[in-house]
Length: 261
Image (cartoon, rainbow, N blue to C red; front, side, top):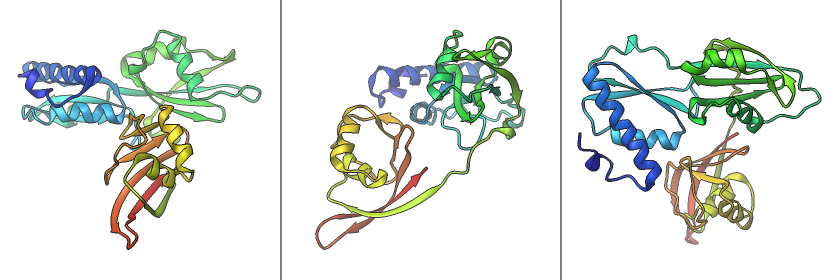
């Protein structure tokens, strides 16, 4: 496989590494006739990997994140004509419960606790925070270790069990449609409309590396947005540029945005 040609469209060292790993896995899957599994990738990283794999007719890929709306997922790269029904999920779901009545914990706290055990970030999928703990999608190969060794967060003792993916407690996503107009397709203008804040405040959020476009951090408020792009800010949901409806008589651009909360 021509690695240089297959990765020529990628930018930056991180994208190149993802591309090379995808090619290596695809090559091994084809040679051994056995599926190969990646680490957990966020949606942007999945898109990078798939952009390389799409040029390889010898293999296909399935994403496993534990549940339908999962953001982080592992790709199973398998040889063409392989029976997908025989592919086992490479993820398991761990539930941790404790008495958090007097301690405030967040996604960051649970992630830090897991990484404090020596677990690498790429082996951890989505973390769903609950009132009395959390549910974590993890790589199958580390689940047994966590069931034995993950016993506390912030001095709060945990009861850790494995649950079926069907038991994942994901709240239904609320969608709000927003019809608006903007002077240009700049990131700060569209994000301000979608998240209900001023353009000045949003520009500051962008410069402080808090805003992602298609799950990739963008620091330029003037970054041009296209139809179909997904804008996200941690803790504030996502905004999808659903449709560009045209130009008004005053020269402003009409948009239909969908905010997921």
